[in-house]
Length: 253
Image (spheres, rainbow, N blue to C red):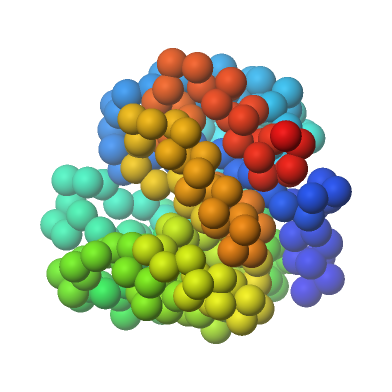
């Protein structure tokens, strides 16, 4: 576990003790979504923006490993599912821990969706991957969403709090989940979590100032940073927006 803990510390070396992860793994689930062609440029310039790491599917790691600066931590996404699937909230394991290591991963990541008829299998997969990742000295990130037939409101405070607690109980080293509709319970769940919590950027928003306000509220509740994707690469001024996120997270403005 020493190797795992040492690698995890690298995500929080900034004086703010917070982290910004740029999630660029949407192409697998969404296909040719707007802004997807920007990914090579964003990866090439990632070290200039001040982010701590990127989240990529294994194919993009192979394609762009040469242009990704070693200053930027690499998180390999282990799970996948497309929006065309039945059901679309299903996530299956498509990359192994040994393959992630061969790709040069500094950490690995898996998405779990709770509140649906496939929850048991996703929980089982994450439990097994956690053991394998820790045995290999790799931190594992749990990206948790309430999604499925049992979910009415994906931002319900009790569900988001449960996601945070679930990630900690299953041994995740970092937990990523949306900001809930109740700041008080969100803060309480973070305070009780054995692992740092990052807020996700969520669906692409027309108002970037709204994204910044949400992130500011989440940080005030105790979030340790953000993992953000569509609200960056789907904007015409992607790098400028990313720099604003970095400054906000690290208290540079």
